[in-house]
Amino acid sequence: MKAMLDFYFTQMKMAIQQQIQYRVANYFYMIGMIAEPVIYLVVWSTVARAQGGSVGGYTPGDFAAYYIVWTLVRNMNIVLTPYVWENYIQRGELSMELLRPLHPLHATLAYFSGWKFVMIAMWLPIAAILTIVFQPTLNPQLWSIAAFAVALWGGYLVRFMLLWLLGMITFWTTRVSAFFELYFTLELLFSGRLVPLSLMPQWVQQVAAFLPFQWAFGFTIELLLGKLTPAQALYGLGAQVFWTLLGLFFVNLLWRAALRRFSAVGA
Amino acid sequence: MSGKKNGSGKILYPDQATIHITQLEKYYIVPEREAGLRAAVGSLFRRKHREIKAVDGISFDILPGEMVGFLGPNGAGKTTTLKMLSGLLYPTAGEAIVLGHVPSRREKTFLRQITLVMGQRNQLAWDIPALDSYELNRAIYQIPRGEFKRTVDELIELLDLQDIVRKPVRNLSLGERMKAEIAGSLLHRPQVLFLDEPTIGLDVTMQRRIRAFIAEYNRRFGASVLLTSHYMADVVALCRRVIVIHHGRILYDGGLSGLVEKFSAQKTIVLTLPDSNIDLTSYGAVRSKDAGRVTLQVPKSETSRITAQLLADLPISDLTVEDPPIEEVIEHVFAQGAEAAA
Image (cartoon, helix red, strand yellow):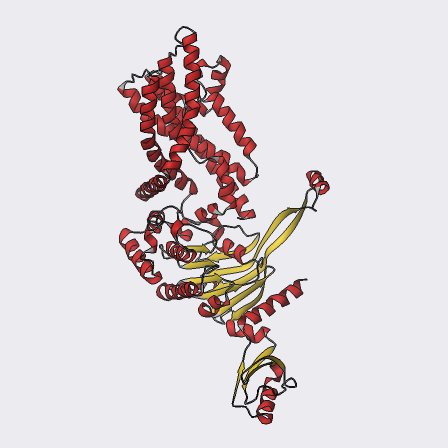
C-alpha cells in the first residue's frame, strides 16, 4: 500500500510537471471546452426569461450556477480518451508499459489525477470571469460542499473505468471511432451534460437511472447546487462506487484476454 | 542429473541457465489479398489468411553473466524472440524459462529482474528531464531511496550523463537520449538485459561509449545480455558467443571465431612486395593492390600450399594470413540461409 501511494504521488507530481510545460495549450483546450456550456447557458437563460423567469424550477441564476459548476466537473472527469488507444498500441507505448511490474491502469489513473491539479489552477480565473458575467445563484450547505468534493473524484473514477473499457475494444478491432461516437452521444443525452436531467423527458430520466453517465456529470453538479437531499447524495455516492467497481471488474475480466490478443499479434 | 552443452561449449544443467528455451515457436496469422478494388470487395466475403512463422522451433540456453550476440537479417525473428523472452508475446509453442519464470505469465518478480531496451522506442517522458522519469522508475520498481541515489550517481558517472539528465528529453540529441534511456532501463539493476539495436543511428564514438558501458555493467553485476545489432562492431566487442537466426530458425550457435571457421570458405593473404605489379592471378583472386601491398583471396583448404608457393616464388618482405571481415562472413551466412529457405 505504501509503495502504491508512493507511486501515485510520484506519477501525479510528474504529470503536474509535464502539464505545466503545456500551460498555453491547456488554456486553449479549456477555452474550447468552456464554449460548450456557455452556449447551453445562454440558450437556457434566454428560454427561462421568455417563460417568465424559470424553466422546470431553474432560474437564469440557477442555470449560470449549473453550467459554471459544469466546467469544473468536466475538467475533473477528463480521462484517457478511447481514441488514444489506437496510437498507444500501434506506437508500442503499451509494450513499454507492459514491461513494468505495474498494471498500466495505475499509471494512467495517477497521471490524469495529477493533471487535474494543473487544470483546476487554470480553471479558477475562468470561473471567476464566468461568475462576474453570468451572476450564478449558488448557496451550498457545508455538507454538500464536502460531498461534492468526494463526488468530483467519484465521477472521475466512473468515467475513467467506462472509457478505459471502451478503449480496450481497440485490442480486438481497429477503426473503433464509430463506437466511441455512439458512446459520447449517449453520454450527452443521459448524463446531464447537455441540460439538467430534471428538464429532460420522463423516459430519458428513467433510462438514465439505469446508466452510469449521470454519476460522472449531473449528479455532482446538482449536489453543489443544493438540489439533492442528504439521502439522494448518499445514494449517488454509492452509485459512483458501484459503477466504478463494476467497471473495474470488467476491466480485470477482459484485460487478460486483451493482453493475450495483443501478445498474439504484437506491437 | 544430465546436462547438455550450450553454444559456449559449457556443460549446462537446466536450472543453471538464466535463459532456457526449447523448441520455441511464434506464428502469426495475417490477412492478405491482391491489390485493387475487386480484391478489396472480394475480401469482404472470402478473407484469406497466411501463417507466418516468425520463430520456428529455436532452442538455446544462456548462462548467468553471459553476453550473446543475436544476429540475423531484418525479419529473421530476433525481435519476436526478445519480446517472447521479456513477456510481451505469448509463444505459439515451445518452452521459455527466464530466471526461473515463464515470461508470458508476466509475474512482477520476473519483470523486476529484466529489461528490454529497444533502440527505436522511448520510455522516458519527452517534456521533462530524465531525472524525473528516473524518479518514477524508482517508485515503480520500489527501489529504496539510498540504493536509487547510489545507482543513479553510478550510471551518471559511467555514461557521462551529468548535464544530460537535467535537460528535457526533447532537447537531447539521439545519442544523448539513448544513453539516458539505457540508464533509465537499468536503475532496478536487472539481471537480464535484452538489448534490441541499442546503438542504432548513433555515431561511432557514442556506439563505442555504449558498448564499453554494457561491458562494464555485465562485469559489475554479472548480468546476462542478449544483444541484437546490425553493427558487427557491437557484437565483436561484447560477445564471444553468437546465435545466428534466419527465417525463424537457428543457423549457428557458438563462438564468434567458430562462425568464421564454419561459414567462410576463403582466407585472405596480405603480401608486401617490392613490386606490386607482378601478376598474382595464378595464386588467387586479387582483391586490392596498394603501394607494394597486395591482398589475395584464396580457398581455405589451399591456404597452406599457396602460402608456401608464394614464399618460394616471390621476394616477399611480409606475409599475413587473415580471416575475412566478420561482416562478409555474416553476409555469406545470411545468403546461404536465404538459399536454403528458398
